[in-house]
Image 1 (cartoon, helix red, strand yellow):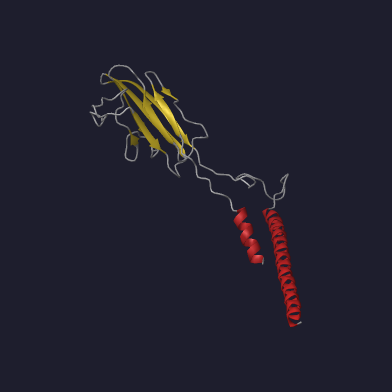
Image 2 (spheres, rainbow, N blue to C red; image 1 turned 45 degrees about the vertical axis):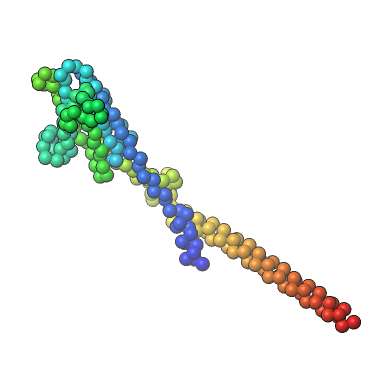
Length: 221
């Protein structure tokens, strides 16, 4: 019985895993700035993506994004992320296919699991093959932490000296006790139902025997 109680209790108390739904942040590149430049919002967590979109309509303008993924302070090195030269638009043929496959108007990057940290990135703007601007910004990727309601979180106070002492063992014991009471109640009702069913069957059989006895007597007369 104790094993069943513990099993059902752990099953119902088991926290449900909630997978993080990927979100995408758009960064717009215009002729005089990057919007937004620095990404510091705590909502930007591991698993999220960032898309740099070229929106500079200056003639013969192009931009390149270089992200220091290995965090060594060098842009464009081994292990870093670097886009092609982005333009405002790309020419398509009658089938909607890129005429120049290397042409792109945006650059995307997804920060996977265990990627929390600060990543510097650089945007270089070129007009007529001459560099006009270089912007340096950073992206802060925060940890993707799932906290279940009612569960203690990092930084909660336990033990002496705390204003409120939270005893997990006591809460679990209370939950076990409540579940055990509920299971006993179900068993009692089930046993009572079986008893009533057996009693009903016995009464029906007794009545049937009486009926058959009376019938036999009547036939013998």
